[in-house]
Image (cartoon, rainbow, N blue to C red):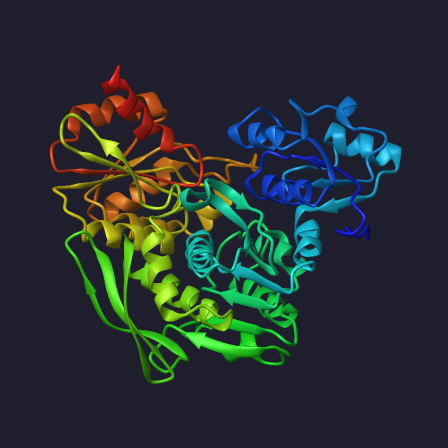
Length: 462
């Protein structure tokens, strides 16, 4: 495998440079003096920023974009072998790395590397830990899977040994990482177009745990069932959090009128004091305790943890308040696309002032929707009214004999009002006639459903 050496900068071509993780890695290499070129399907704010930093980027992707003098090409899981740029790189004999392989090699250049893994909560926990380390003056390099307002984007290149990145389990990409600190937030059935079942997923998380450096620490949620199956046989130290018998756990939890938590943190029976968040929900208290445990290991004080968490106001598309309609309804957007995430978001919404909760949900991939159908219906039934958009196919072409109307029927069978409309325009018209003062309108999903709320707000601004 081709090896990146920070001491010997070379020419790296990024196929799909506009992706949230790819753009972050490109920015790190630019800072380290590498020549960075690349391509994407279309221009975006992320590609514009990289261009300002010195990258040369072509849109759209085509074979002639590949420079003959490139030393290595990096590509994402979305790039297939029939991609014209991939084919051209093979013809030219250019070595290739996956995005995950490059992330692993970049991570190896930082002594205090942190990889944040888990089915849910990676972006939020990475962001919380980033805010704490910034407050503590640790000058971290950060690669986060969303836009973090506190760093003005998805990437921050620091000048220290501290590097924080998300570690995604899809296609086992996180197995390319060997961090000093590995964080596992939770393990649930997801990405069943790649994994066989939950046991297969748990096995991959066990392998991730074994990749944590022997001089490092695995920080893992103590509420994960059969925890020993994940932690047995690993060389790193193990710290647990979350459950009362864990090394770190939350106590004396209270919520304000917006569902935002204040809590104490106990460390092996010792009270570390009170902490307050600016993001709602029980799930975010769990994320915060994990971030505190990691920051504690990395030398941050509890006061720095306290101040850092208060600086974090939420990442984009995580219970993000988008605005208020003229009728008095509040528009919120959330990235939730798995039943566990949906349940957590809607539980948080229940604690937020509201009349009715409208959830506009866009299912993400046919495979996930079919495999978790009953879970989706059960979680979405926490809303008062559910409006379903067509399934966002992403990489899939087979609809597996289902549609959003299948999910609508399952939700209706649970006694919750549910509607399926085949276009965003129809959904917007439907909502204009029904959403009223005091309602919460939550657009939800990993696709482009966010535009529904944005279009409703924009149409009133004209």
